Length: 224
View 1 (tube, rainbow, N blue to C red):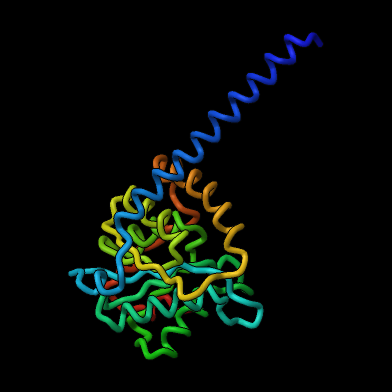
View 2: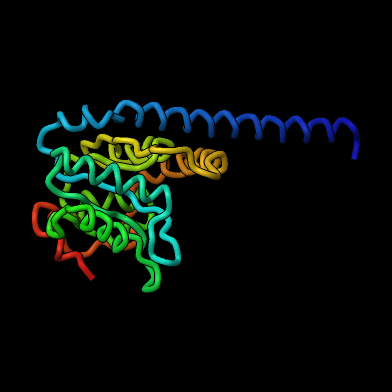
C-alpha cells in the first residue's frame, strides 16, 4: 500500500474518531445541563406542591438480601423526603426480572422497617432500566409530578429522560458518601447518557407495561 493511501486512511480514521468524540461529549454535556436544572436540595423539594410520589431508583442488592451502600443511601434519602412531606407515596422501581433476585422487595422492606406505612410504598417490579422506570412511572403508575432519588451522577440522566417523556420531574441526590468504583461508573455513565439521549427520542415501549396501578391508591396491591 502506497504511503499516500496510508496517510489518507489514517486521516479518515482520525476524522471519524474526532467527530465521534465531539458528538459523545457534546450529547453528554447536553444531558447533564438539562438534568442539572431540575436537581433540588431536600429543602427545595419539601417546598414543592402536589408531588405524586417520590421515585427511588433501584440498585444492587447483595446475595444476603441486604441493600448495597448506594441503594441504602437512595432508600435513606427517599424515606427522609417522605417523612418531610414531599409526597404521600414512594415508588420503588427496580429489577425483579428473576425469582431469585428482587430489588424492590428489599427496597420496600427497608422503608416499612423505617416506619413508612406499607400502603404508601409501591413496587415497580419491572424497572429494568432508568428509561423503563420513568416510562412506567408515567404509564403504569399514573404519575405526572415526581421527585426522583438516586446518586447525582445518575440523576442527570434520569431527569433528562423524565422531561423527554413529559413528566414534571425533580431530583434530590443521595450521595451520603463516596462510593468505591465511582470513576468507572462515571465513565460508563457518559455512554449511558448518549444511549438514553436517543432512546428518549424514539421512546420505545418498555419490556412490560400491563394494567394501570395508580400511585394514588394502595401500594400493597404491588406486593408479591
